[in-house]
Every structure is written in C-alpha cells, then in structure tokens.
Length: 87
Image 1 (cartoon, rainbow, N blue to C red):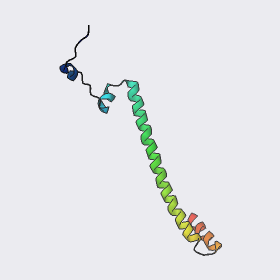
Image 2 (image 1 turned 135 degrees about the horizontal axis):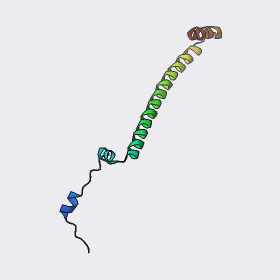
Image 3 (image 1 turned 90 degrees about the horizontal axis):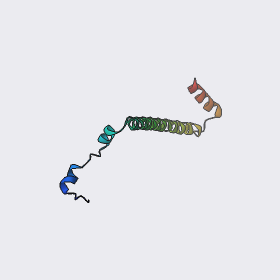
Image 4 (image 1 turned 90 degrees about the vertical axis):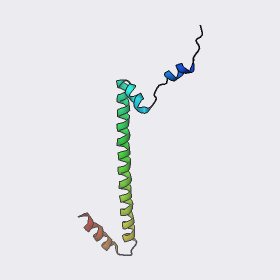
C-alpha cells in the first residue's frame, strides 16, 4: 500500500516557482489582478514623487519669503514685492 519514494522521483517533480513562471501559469483573472495592482503601484509612486517635488519647491519658496519678511523692510515694500511677483 505504501509506495517508496526514491530520490529520482523527487528530482523529477521539481516545479519552477519563479515569479515569471508563476505569472505565466496563472489564470486570466489572476493575471488581470496582478497587472491592475502593478499599475496602481506605479501610479501611487508617481503621485508620491510629484508631491515630494512640490514640497521641496514650497520649502524653497517659504525660505525665500522668510528671508524677505525678516529683512526689516516695511510692509508696503513687502506687499509691492509679492504683488509684483504675482502679476
């Protein structure tokens, strides 16, 4: 009743578990979900990088404003400087 497994039987039963082979052997639904998740991940990282770039630019603008604000000029000069830059 019990079968004896030899080392030759084990070596012939080795299955490739690489990501590519698992993807290629997967069902259409699984492939679709994987592709959708990868696209969502790429989009998320793009948004993260965009926000980091914007935050860096805002930090630079904040530092420029602080430097001008604390320079000791009058508020009229400060208003004219920033009103001129907006137009």
